[in-house]
Each structure stands twice: as C-alpha cells, then as structure tokens.
Image 1: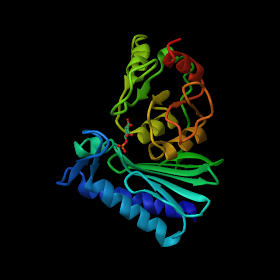
Image 2: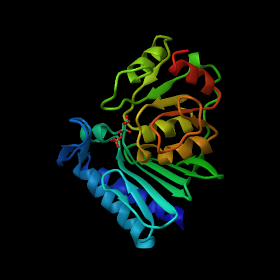
Image 3: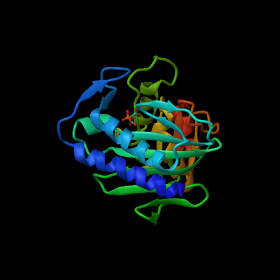
Image 4: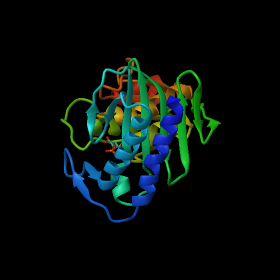
Length: 256
Ligand code: IPD
C-alpha cells in the first residue's frame, strides 16, 4: 500500500516536470541567488502531497519547499519535488522527483524518477533496488585510483580544513575523474546502478538524499559520513560508494 502510493506520487510529480520543462515559468531565489525554486517545484510538490494525503491524511511530511507538515504519525514522507532545480531551470534534463519514506526513523522505501531519461529507481528495505523494474547493483571496482566519481557543491560554505574546494583538489590532483551532475538523488542512484563508483557532498538536506541513500544500501553499497560513522539524513556529510573503494575514498577526501 505504501509502495503503491509512493509510485503514484512519484509519477504525479514527474508529470509536472514534463509539463513545465523548457516552458515559461516563475523562478525565484532562496538561501542564495542561485539556490532556486521554480513554479514547477511548487506544483510538483502539491501534486505529490495531494496523492499522499488522499490515502494517508495523517502522515508526517517533510518537503523541500513547504518544510514540515507535522503529525504524530511514525511514517514520514521526505520529498524533493525537483532535485536538480538549477538543471531544470536551465533546460538540462538531469533532474528528478525524489521521495523517501521513513518509518520509525528508518528509511524503508525510496523512489527517484527522471522522466527525461525515463528512469525510475525504486528501493525497498531488505528487498533490493531496481531501475525500471530490473535489479541493480553497485560496481565491482576495487581501486579508488581507477574509479569514476561524482560530487556536488553547496552554494556557500566556510573556508576551512577539508572544505569542498580542498576535498575536490585532493581527488583531482590524483587524476581521478570526477563528475558534477547537479542532482544528488541522481548521483546516488547512479552509484547504486554502478555508473559511478563513489559520491560525496558536504551540505545535503534530508530530501536530497532520503531515497538515494536507501538505493545505494539496497544495491550493496556503503554510506557513511566523511569520518566513516553511520550516515544520518539529518547531518550534512555524505560519502556513498560501492563499498570496495570506501576506505580509499574516505582517506582521500580527508587529505590522507
Ligand atoms: C540540489 C542538488 C545538487 C546539490 C545541491 C542540492 P535541489 O538540490 O541535489 O546536486 O549539489 O546541494 O541543493 O536544490 O536541486 O533540490
């Protein structure tokens, strides 16, 4: 039942993305000039929340644009109505709807849908992860020096030890290829299906990572913070890999 609603909500959001993509829509700034929200983010968010509320009016919602709709429910829907908003606003088709479902504080279901590539990733706790209904697995590469990595950058940060620029330097000075797609949810899904061997980012929000986090775990990967501690959606650092290169990449991003 939860999964049916999740898929319905993801599809409803995806339809809005398709409807607005490359069209004319309102765009405004949030925390910084380039931290954008578009009319399509808001429309997608309403469509998703409406679908959830039709079946589960009392569930807790945490969504990028509206924030928290608090209830006493032990089920929390964590929604990014468009992950990759800057891409979306520029007509770059690397963006998606991302929804994770947390039960008693643990993510148990997740879906990430990029309608422009017709790719739907779904993960279910203990039951694996799929791309368009086919099981997916992380890559088997063991050597971090030969890996293909992806990262993302925050819109602002304090300069300091192992800040985003320093970490990027540590990695690219080794000559390791690093991509920046502009959607953390897609980055995580692409680790889950083996296109990338690892991903890190400094200042993610729970809605950027909720679904992708489960995707990586269920596809056999590993996720921690930069120190190797258990990952939580509610802290800022994420390091997600195929597992084999985890300690190698962890050392690298810590400048060791
Ligand atoms: C952004 C994307 C991007 C990441 C940013 C996020 P949004 O989410 O996931 O890849 O680098 O940190 O804010 O704003 O497009 O939903």
